[in-house]
Image (cartoon, rainbow, N blue to C red; front, side, top):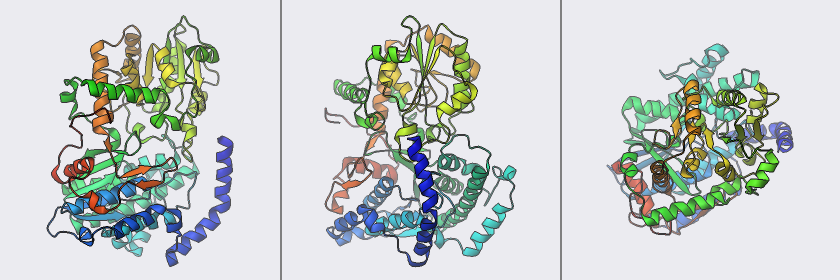
Length: 562
């Protein structure tokens, strides 16, 4: 994989002049070749032609909904325009805002493939998809002049690197609001203070200030009753949210779920935080029905066996405990403690600080602590996404983090490479204790009756079945306590109730489309009339949540077919 990425970076450098030329051609002529690249647009146009013309009309006086569809991640773009049209069929006045291109940098891709940014394919895809359903669309250029862009560039270029983080524009802390996107673009939770990072940070300040100017004017112009955005943590959406908060405009964020073709939503919060605290007291006291228990067990069995979303990380799996023991040289008579890491660029780790400043500090502290506990065996299972997701290789791998502090590991510590086929689920079963930053494996261990110490702010923290650390000293105290105890039956049952709430009620199926392995989209309907009220229950749930502020949660009964 490392060799492949090295070749890719070399190819990027060789192709950069051609991509820059193509970008300039697009700026002048609008030619992008988008229809040959993305078949979703053609499919949507075909569906639109088969649909009744009256479905495209906007009823006057309806609630005003603004979709902030900033970039061309196709599954999110398609979900946005279909949901927007469904809201229009329910009487809403729906508009879409998109970037339109010409920012110096954004987070549509990572540093592995950019710059130059792929504006010449990104912008046309979004605008073409929106146009296919004849939705009114705004672009950045509608709200800012060339002179204003030049002035923003001048102001940012006058900053010293020491001033980047404190930079403000339009009264907003742009230097802080773009940090998550900077980290994602550089694929690291801790950007280095080097020339490349400083240059990218400066470019994000220009992009952020541009969006701050544009978003303020956009909201003043349309005055939406609701704002709908992806994720909420990335810079453009984060800046728009701050403008919405100033004006008292409610906002809804959404994100793709853990399982294919599902979505999660959050009202006035960030969808990737998966905060279901509002609903947890009720569901914590509600026993699972027999059907719900069967569905949960079947779902967990599929994850354990390598089906569901796990298969993209593990092409083959070694699940035999004895084989794992032999490969790692483990002592049968000493307790095993397993660390399950996050990917360093994962937005789930951003602002997830609790006991430690970041994941690297947590790993360093953990290894040093267990170096003084030779009676235990520590295994660090590095997340396979470090090498299994194309073009998203972290700039700083967990191996690099660990070796920086420990060129030689303590004798009782084992590091499992992200390419390894050793089953994480077998490791859970073999372990006396699990340690996580925010990883979902923490909840999965609790479901197996294993104690877990959580070092970051995970979405399942504080629900009654994990040990949640508040400081490094508290982290050590909890390890001592957890190694001498087991989860009670009541705690395991709590974990099961939470897992069902999380996976089956919080995650909302989006049955209008199916996404293939290659991220191509198949539409599961023939006419846009099928998006009308009463035809797709889960679409009704989402639209009612946006229009009527109903919970984004499925509260109905389940059958044995999930």
